[in-house]
Every structure is written in structure tokens, then in C-alpha cells.
Amino acid sequence: SEESELYHAQIHLYKHVYNFVSSMALKSAMELGIADAIHNHGKPMTLPELSSSLKLHPSKVNILYRFLRLLTHNGFFAKTTVKSNEGEEETAYVLTPSSKLLVSGKSTCLSSLVKGALHPSSLDMWGVSKKWFHEDKEQTLFECATGENYWDFLNKDSDSLSMFQDAMAADSRLFKLAIQENKHVFEGLESLVDVAGGTGGVAKLIHEAFPHIKCTVFDQPQVVGNLTGNENLNFVGGDMFKSVPSADAVLLKWVLHDWNDELSLKILKNSKEAISHKGKDGKVIIIDISIDENSDDRGLTELQLEYDVVMLTMFLGKERTKKEWEKLIYDAGFSRYKITPICGFKSLIEVYP
Ligand SMILES: Oc1ccc2c(c1)OC[C@]1(O)c3cc4c(cc3O[C@H]21)OCO4
Image (cartoon, rainbow, N blue to C red; front, side, top):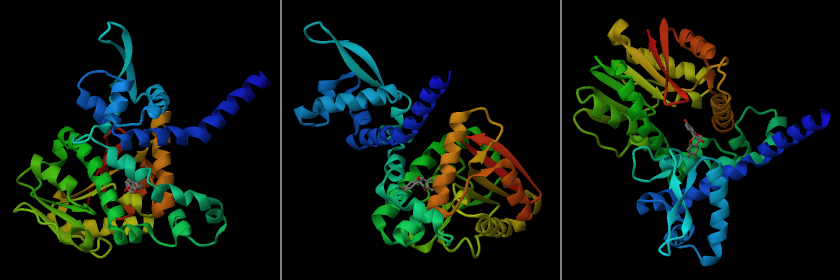
């Protein structure tokens, strides 16, 4: 009926208005260390046990309950019952696979990504979106709001830079699984350069899995300046828009989505130059989102399209469809490529000269 369509539309609209509350509840859970408290408790944890573990004022217990109720509904915690000393059944909370990603110290901990992605520096810019749409300048929403390029912001504020690098390193640690599932991509390589490799999170994983591969982390001088490696893991400072150190393979993980086509083409052409000594045996390994327009996984596509808008608003970057990757790869002069889905929402794209 017309009414039910209206009511469904209303719920759809209100859900999108208040999606941020679920994001902020997740951020609060990360900041409070709820997952750590339950993990360290070693068994289901009641609300009073959790509240005192978090050192919350007694007046906050009911607030904690209301946040846990939403987070449990959203699949971040689960409820069970435990016997109290007096033999009564009491509700207790346990972790789910999603909140296990918030347990600190584990290689799968994504807390620093939650912190970075939901930091005011990623959110405040949305206050000027109308002005941004109506201005004639081609700049990011971030620049429109702050007057400066996001990378300049990171390079001038060491706390933000380390927060960003911690987030990238967290995501890279999950990449360990992808390496194990795709060993063939790295077998046979004698050297690899991780372009925009930051503090070397990925290079360390590759070095652990393939100790004989000579790994070079290539990033801006102020990023790698004072980092020291070992005989098969070294750090080189430079500008990927000018040239890339030569190696058998170039790795571009979560890099090209930060840049528009013109600049991505530059990075790819410099990467092609870097592997040119290897002839047909050289390769460029791209790890990024490849949007599958025919996918029926609406949740996955929603995340990929959200990342596209995040890249647009912060870097004038973009997430690319398979067709867009193909055009970029061929425009850069490569002859063929192979796309393998990895890490749930990203793809590993092997590109050959
Ligand atoms: O190439 C990438 C890959 C992921 C991310 C990037 C850029 O920036 C946006 C983002 O939402 C983000 C913004 C951040 C952050 C981490 C973070 O993760 C997200 O730490 C500080 O601000």
C-alpha cells in the first residue's frame, strides 16, 4: 500500500540519518577497551564486572548497558548467561568475530583503523560539503574545510601521521593471510619494492614469509628517514611521482586509490620503469578495491562505494571498477593483468609489462 511504502521509506531514511550513532558506539567501544576487558576476563563478563573493569563511575553502568545493547544488536557482542554466586542466572557478554578485531596486541587488531577513520580530522570536513559542491576549485572536501592538502596535514602533524601509519599497519597485518593464500604471487621474486610502504608493515610480513626476497620500503624521506632495516629489508626515501627504485616486483598496496587517474598513471609508469630490467618476468602487484558492478553482495558494494567517497573527499582519489583498472593498466603500457579477490573487500591485481 502507499502508506506502507511511505513507512518503509521513512525507516530507510532515518536509518541512514542515524548510521553515525552505530559508528560512534563502535568508536566508544574501541576507546573504552571493552573487547580487551572481555578478552582478558577469559569468560563471559557481566555488566557490573565489565563496568568495574573499565573503572566507570557506578552512575555510568546503565549507559554502558544501552551502548552494549546497540553494539550487541549490531553483532559486535553476544549475550549469554552465567550463574551468580547465589546461583542466579545473570546476563553476560562475550566477543564475536567482529569485536575480536578490537582486541589489542593481536595481529588482527583494527582498533587503530577505527580510531583514525573516525577521528575528527576525517569527520569535521563534512560541515562544508555544500560549499565544496558549489565552488569552482578542484580540491578535496578536506582542503575546502582546512585550507590544506591531507598529506601536508599528516606531514606537519606527527601525531596524525603516526595515527594514520598505525591504521595502515593494522590493515597490513591482516594482509598476512592474503600473502599465505597467494604465495605463488611472490614465489620466484628476488627483490620487491613496496611503494608508499610507510613504516614497512607489509614489507616485514613479506620478508618473514619470503626471507630470501630483498625488500625495499620506498616512501617520502620524512616517513622512512630514520627507519633502519636489515640485510634484506631496507628503507629508501624518494618521490614515487619522479622515480621508483628498481626491483623484480613493485607492490602498490592501498596506494593508487589515494590518487586520481593522471597521478596513478604516473606511479604506474614509474613502476613499469622500475621492473623494466626483468623483461617479461617483472610484475607490479596492486592491492586495492576493485568494484564489481555485477556483484549481488550489496553490503560489500556499499563498503566499496563508501571507500570511494572517502577517497574522493580526502585525496581526490577513487576506488576503481574492473573496467577502470583495465583502462589504467593498459594506458600505463602494461600488456596484461590478473585480478584475485583478497581480504574480503579488496583485490590483488598482478600486472605484467
Ligand atoms: O589509503 C588509505 C586507506 C585507508 C584509509 C585512508 C587512506 O584514508 C581514509 C581512512 O578512512 C583513514 C583516515 C585516517 C586514518 C586511517 C584511515 O583509514 C582510511 O588515520 C587518520 O585518518
